[in-house]
Image (cartoon, rainbow, N blue to C red):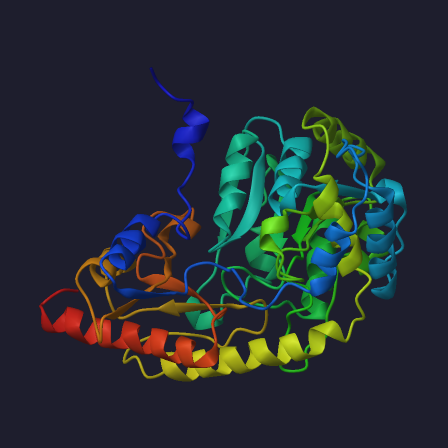
Length: 399
């Protein structure tokens, strides 16, 4: 029996693809440092658990398909502080940001429609666009240019009669790149002038460094009819397992489409929405210490990466990821070797290879993503293990 062509075209997640090797290494007593997945070690605010424990209903019933009004109200208050005016009908609560992405692509794409996506990209973009029978058209970026894609001529050169949308994440995953306000304005102008949808994944919005301001595409009222914002509590509040996200748009047709899809899966999780509502009650100062911690981790990891001879790395400005071009030929083969053969004091390291995050063939083979979600001393040791591994790898005649 043959599987669908859609599924065959999808990529395995580079973040989870090599987990089996790490599991085997740990079973042998090896300590494996995980830099592959964006799972923060920051404690989930206690208010989340307290809200769930306060649930006193005798029946755990379905919620509304659009999500609880109480959570929607708090999301609306949050966006109002950003200068974005929303109403309840503009907020669809979803089972994580991933479902919001799937709903967005399913709502706008017909078979063969093209979506412009800067590469390297979050692999689920490729998965969900392919599932909606669309086609990813990459806007290629370079490590040497800090993975910047905000060049009007490069974006417009990719637009064809089949182009339906531009899909971006800001701050960036996997690159950590952050758009300036002028670059955001340029992108808003491009989608407006070319009659495109803009899908703006803003789940890392708070995590910008070096004094850069937090921003949202929702601030541009002149594109509100073509803007779909993807949001989530996963990274913002270190609540990845709760699976609470949002699809936000002031386009009535999009919201009606999202509601149809939402009704098909019945409802978001009742208890998790109760916890999420409590998270949006937290004062904005909650993020101050967390941002400071991530910025210090970024600096420590970057300093250690710069000790790898021949590595190319631009200091990321946001999120909690760092892209590195390694002085080897194949990051996947090197990772398998690290997990199966390399040991230093009975320790090794795991990262996310980036080949699957490119749609253009043969790009990203020697690039990796590091998630700086460990304590600083563990981050430094992890990157040191990559450096020591490369030195040993090359001494064995491997490339």
